[in-house]
Length: 75
Image 1 (cartoon, rainbow, N blue to C red):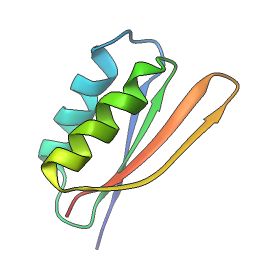
Image 2: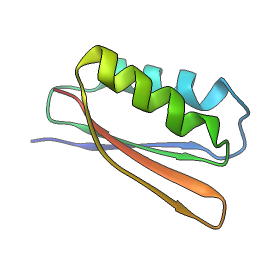
Image 3: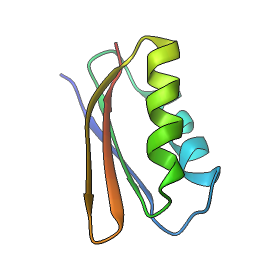
């Protein structure tokens, strides 16, 4: 059964949130969703570029009160 893996990287500066995302991604199984919370606006760009290159699914990006929520599904 697919899991949701939360990466709370709100207190980290670039490249910290992206590194934490990669750690979670490596542990994930296909179908799992990695949910990244980040206060660093560069995280969105970094993860978007990475998912395109790695052929993974970027499901959503939202911003609320300066916190980005980025959801990626491992293919």
